[in-house]
Image 1 (tube, rainbow, N blue to C red):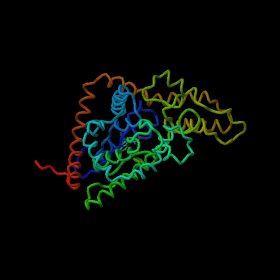
Image 2 (cartoon, rainbow, N blue to C red):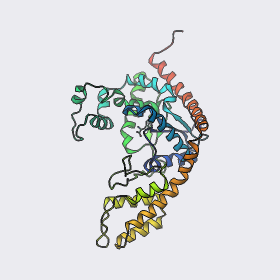
Image 3 (cartoon, rainbow, N blue to C red):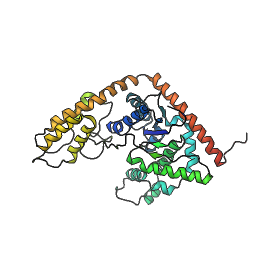
Image 4 (cartoon, rainbow, N blue to C red):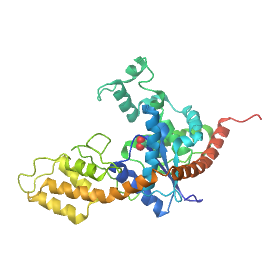
Length: 356
Ligand code: TRP
């Protein structure tokens, strides 16, 4: 809760769909533990402006914002303990984004890995092609690689700096954005000779980074079909997804190495099942008696123990527009108070002062 002296923790999730187990273990469950530890002044928001960089359908965007707030609350974020808000409810962010962009080079933005990735995808360029600059300059339609995508790191830096946040719990994929945030903060501070923005650091509450694998046999859980378990998934759907998870032909001899798809299921078990349950299946793998069907049944059971109560709360909360409205209004007020103070300081040091 807001209290002088506590370090500010801030994190956000882009409003691009329902939250899945990867979001839950990698972010949300940690946010809740952080909040309940009462050590920090916590702020959690939904990055709807960032979602605009990839041109979502307006109706979908609005739905997604509501879904994520609902899922935040259902997973245990408490508006009395944490500041929960929507990015676009803090217009000060948009103004500071414009101001900070004056101190950001397009070169450094173009070299950002996430920008290159998204630009390559938008242009349909092979993922190993590094020479995207000429392709970007050569395309006629600004819709393909928009300036918002390029300046995504500026906006993210502003989310953080405008609240003067110290700690930003994010995954590895956001590390570079955080590095840029520190660089922008340092540059701004030294250009104007002020100590306006603290340099934020990543931090992992509990100290153990979690990589949540997907169900399709390779890589982490993402929003692709057949790979992803959502907090909102119905019992039947969830069971079906788990039963269809990719495995292999099974161990042929004792103590065989474990293939990636099977290791992924073990990892999911590590996150959701009791230690002796996991050990049982590992032993069964080692002595070749394992039946993947049994493992999956157990895994589905254990995942459901976590997700079903959350799903029930989601269904309750999402019908309560008045409650959601109250939460977000209160969050916006708190977030704006701090943002307005920082923006005032930034304008002042940049020489933007009123004549009336
Ligand atoms: N870029 C982050 C992501 O895709 C979301 C985000 C936007 C964010 N602004 C932020 C995260 C500020 C932490 C702090 O996951």
